[in-house]
Amino acid sequence: MRTQIAAANWKMNLTFQQGEKLLDDILAAKIKLKDHQKTIFAVPYPYLTMTRSEVTDEKNYYAAGQNCHHKRSGAFTGEVSVEMLHSLKINYCIVGHSERREHFAETNSMVAEKVNLCLGNFISPIFCCGEALPVREAETQNEFVAQQLKESLFHLTADQIRNVVIAYEPIWAIGTGKTATTEQAQEMHAHLRSIIAVQYSVAVANQVPILYGGSVKANNARELFSCPDVDGGLVGGASLVAADFIEIIRSLK
Image (cartoon, rainbow, N blue to C red; front, side):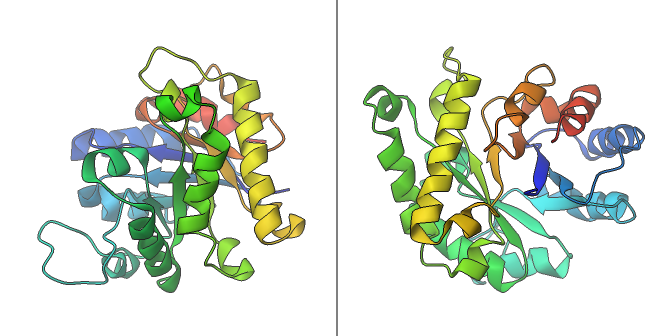
């Protein structure tokens, strides 16, 4: 079975003390992950060392960066490099999140640079893709996400892309009052996997985890994760509530 992942994205939330308590509460549930399951906490930079320390002795629990800079080093005040994350023994990093693309004007080529730096530093990128409402309304979402993958990932070798996690964000259904159905989630995940299969092979495509990032909650996680091409979730708001995220972890296939 493909790796199944419950990934928490805390975004810019929680004080250090609140974050530490949240982790303690989640880990207190003592969920024993199977060999093919992982739980990842993408936390604000100041909390990375604390988070890594908390999960060090927990099997298949990891800390992740929420972002990294697209250059190796330099005069970029306030930014964090991939080498810095690697020096903290961080295993994962989110790249290309829709909020980074929208608010910080990140392009597909910039995300490609981040992907390269992550893989060069033994960090698995959690590559985000997805379409906004105008793209969905124009029914060009398939072409849109295909272009994102082509420009940011398809320069990689087959061995390299096996170390990438993909997260699909239906941006059009986040905070818009519109809702993505389970069928729409499965449809897009299957499309993404088919694109990878054409570029590489069916075997490679069947090894790449594809997470759903569209308002995963405790009450819909099990249904979403039951879809054949949905390999878990990249979870925002629900990851800030211990009881909710515990249920999401338990919903993994």
